[in-house]
Length: 88
Image (cartoon, rainbow, N blue to C red; front, side, top):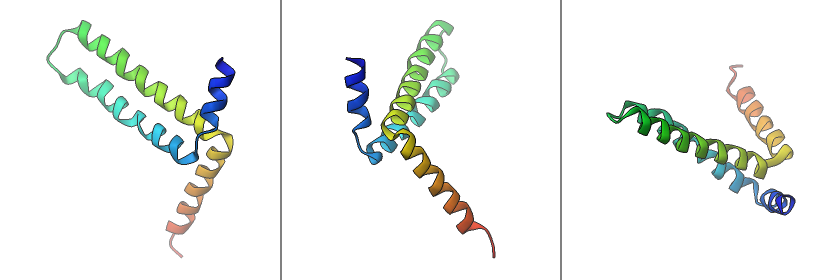
């Protein structure tokens, strides 16, 4: 079952992987921003565990969808951007 699910995730498109990966950013922000709320420490801890767990889930799911070839593609894109932005 686990293998079948992983294969299904890996079959999704690169763009879908980037969208899922980008979804982890708001959950990271929420997981730490909620510490500024005026609520009890127990609630803060519970909210942090929930939102940080969601952020990690989206992060690893996005990386699974993108895969190794997608990571190479992203690195190449960032290197091209860096070379393009260097002054001549």
